[in-house]
Each structure stands twice: as C-alpha cells, then as structure tokens.
Length: 452
Ligand SMILES: Cc1cc2nc3c(=O)[nH]c(=O)nc-3n(C[C@H](O)[C@H](O)[C@H](O)COP(=O)(O)OP(=O)(O)OC[C@H]3O[C@@H](n4cnc5c(N)ncnc54)[C@H](O)[C@@H]3O)c2cc1C
Image (cartoon, rainbow, N blue to C red; front, side):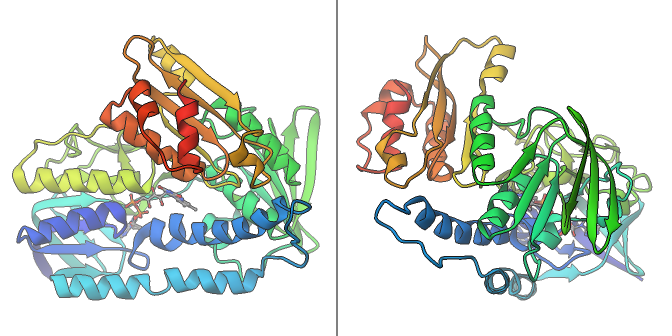
C-alpha cells in the first residue's frame, strides 16, 4: 500500500514539530513518524524531566546552604520515588496530548520505525509513504556506542531519569553536561557518585576557569570527579558493577550499583537506511547545505541533533533549524542558519552558563578582547544564598565595546545568561549594557559590574 503526502517528517521532537506544524498551516498534507512515543527527547527524556529533578535538588540545596545562617534544614531530603512520580506528571501526558493536537490539525501520525526504500519513498511498518514535496529527517541523537568491554551494563540517561528508586551508588562514564547534572541531582538525593572523564578537560564547551571552579564545587559536594580516567571494562560482581579504568596513577577499580552513560550523543541515523534514500551522511549527521537541504537528495532536508550543522545539540537550536527548513520549503530556499549568541547551560547547582565567544575561541579567531573576570563568591548575591563557588568571565572588544562572550557560574546563572544572550544578539555595547537600570537586588543587577 502507498500513501502520498506533500511532506513526510521523521521524528516528532522540537525540530520535527516546527517543520510539520508550519507546513500543515501552509496547506500541505503532512505525515509524521516516530519509533518512540511522540514528543521527542526534550519533553520526554531530556531537558524537561531533567529540570524537574534539578529543581527538587535545588530546593534541598538552597536550605542546606543556609544551614547555620538562619535556616534549619533538619530532616529535609529528596523522596526519590515520589519525585519520579511527580516527574511523570510532566512526561506521561505529552504523547497523547500531541497526537490529539496533530489529529485536530490534520497531521497524520505513524508510530513505527521509518526506513528509506528509495529517494522518494519511506517504509513504515509495511506501508510506503510517498513524499511529493519533501522529506525531513529530524531523527535526533542517541547515546554513542561505548568501546568498553561490558558496555551493555551501562544505563542511558533515559533510564536514569526514570529510576524508580535511587541506587546507593552511581558511576557516570564521561564528563559532559548530562553527567554533571545527574551527579549534582543524585548527590543531593543522597547517592555516592563518581564521574570518570577520559581527559583533563570535562565540559569542554564551557569557560575553562569556571569549569575548574565547578569541578571543585562538585568535589566539595562529595562527588568523586576523576579526570584522565579512561574506562576499560565493566563487570557485574555480586549484584553490583565493577568499573575498571586507566587513570593517571595506574588502574582505577570502582564498584557501583548503577553505571550511567554520560559519554556523549551521536546522530540517530542507523535505522533509516539513508543510503537507499540517496542521503549522504557521516558520523556527524546528515550532510546538508546552507539551507539545511541534503547535499545528495534535493527532496530531503534535515534539522536538529541529526543534522550536520554548526549548531549545538540543544532544543532551541532544533526548533530554530526546524523553522528554517519550514520557511525554505514553503517559500523556496532563502533562509540560512546563524549560530551566534546561543546560550548553553549546565544545570548543576550552581549552574554554569555561557554565550558567545570563549577566550580560546577569541584567540584562535584573532579577535582582540578584554576579559572581565572575577571570583564573585563574596558578592552579596552569592553570600546571601550561602554559595561559595561563583564567578564570571565576560569578553569585551576594546575598539567597539561589543560584548563578545559571557560565561557565568553561580546562583541563577541559567537565567542571567539570557541577558547577555540578548545583549550579544542585539549588539548592545558594554557601556550601553551598564546604563540599563536593572531591578535591584537581583542577579540581573550584578551584570552591570561584570562588563567593567
Ligand atoms: C538527558 C538530556 C538532557 C538534555 N537537556 C537539555 C537542556 O537542558 N537544554 C537543551 O537545550 N537541550 C537539552 N538536551 C538536548 C535536547 O533534548 C535535544 O537537543 C533536542 O531534544 C533535539 O531535538 P530533535 O528534534 O533534534 O530530536 P529529538 O527530540 O531527539 O527527536 C527525534 C525523534 O526521532 C525519532 N526517530 C529516530 N529515528 C527514527 C526512525 N528511523 N523512525 C522513526 N522515528 C525515529 C526518535 O525516536 C525521536 O523521538 C538534553 C538531552 C538529553 C538526552
């Protein structure tokens, strides 16, 4: 059987939704396919459920930081099973809510794996879908394969976010943002946590000095952060797992109840049979031109985590690329993507955030800059919440006064970074930024002191 649509979209996350809804509004017939429950990573297995756990950990942390400063946190604790049930009140309704909405909008959904059979047809569970105007690959990312003996014993972030009970001890393989976020939540909830990172530079996309400070903060919390620790094997031993790694001083042997994959994600393209569709791709994703159109099959576009673009694998970027694809489909190729001033956050406690150029990038690009950096842990905004690890590094171009990059570690850095994103996006100079009368006393009002 063959069904014909103007547009066939693979995936149902942020990128897919942005394309499908716009093209449908423009009058196109649209089919949307997902092999997993509808809604995508962010809403079901990523940002949103993660933030529910982080905010609970933050509530506990806030009281503990003020112990002896006027707050008695006695007996305050994370009730993990209840927290996971609360988290499910955010995730469980999503697929049904979305499918009902798409049915009302006239988008036809297929819950199965999509596979190219030729450059214009996709097979979904025995039915062939023929796309007359376009096919959009918005298939997201998955945890990368680990070249570790015993990798099958590692659980993914999906499983961590839905653990019915908190294991007494956890080892996280890899030192990216997912590991640090999970470590901060699990440690606040009472687990013994270890992070093993293979080189000396975890969180490589963030300001090096602030990462060092966050690593110190993480260790002060009781998390065992091991750098230059390359995991080799994972073996089950007496109902637990023995993790063996090569470390700077020799072999590391650690036992943990659960081992979690935090070693990065790769485009999820394996099930798509892209070669049959004439869609060129690599380990970095679907190869696209500036309009996010496949370089080898003009009927195909790609957006989000699975597209080989300069955009970081983040939800706002997936939505942005989805909107670009929709514009190019509806009006013809005319919009290209730009990836300046995209804020990025590690939701640790305190959070680490950055937007724009880092020092090493500015140097590599030969951009001249002045760095305004400081340890701000003695500022009122940190002291009044008991936070002893905070700081910033803001880069300003001397000739123009333009803010080139801002990097923050500290209370609510995840919110404050948006002020800098706005300033960089609009080209607001440091002098103009300082003139703004921010509400006081807020974290926003601190920013004026970070650019001078
Ligand atoms: C634990 C975690 C925390 C995160 N936290 C944040 C955060 O705080 N902020 C942030 O901005 N980003 C965060 N991210 C990243 C963010 O979730 C992704 O960048 C974003 O969801 C990507 O959206 P997408 O539309 O590209 O793909 P996805 O939302 O991943 O959607 C792709 C969909 O395609 C489906 N699919 C794949 N192959 C096929 C096939 N062959 N047939 C049918 N369907 C298929 C998949 O099942 C999936 O549902 C996090 C990710 C994780 C894992």
